[in-house]
Image (cartoon, one colour):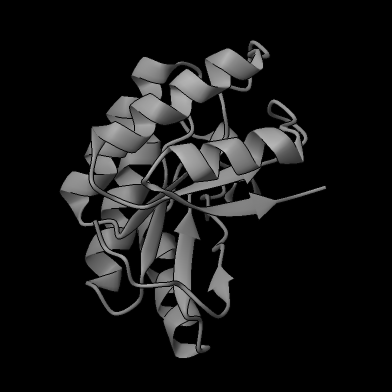
Length: 167
């Protein structure tokens, strides 16, 4: 696992769609190039601000592949592994790792509100699925996690190195 600390502004690029609401992969490439040219220190996608929930699972994987290829290691790339279940999150995590992502970011499953013990097991599974560092995303549409739970997860799971707190 990379122990390099991440610092600076990590941008969340928008996910472009065509006029017919289809995923625009050429647009994804252009947005990534813009982020790099604008001086971002990292890229995070697809997450809430990049409309991950509007994408099918296959489209999410295409976005990860396109960003990873376009970025080509120029900036740290934090790929989303948020899933509706642990199994889906592990699928996204392994795919991101295979595509060359530098880290993962995830919220707990957001459809069925998980209890703290379930959240712990989710992040333990995610943390052991790859050797990538994990960012926990504490977002209101997901399962709100207390400061105590977040601290426990960061202390107890070696790959959980970052927390993205949102309100």
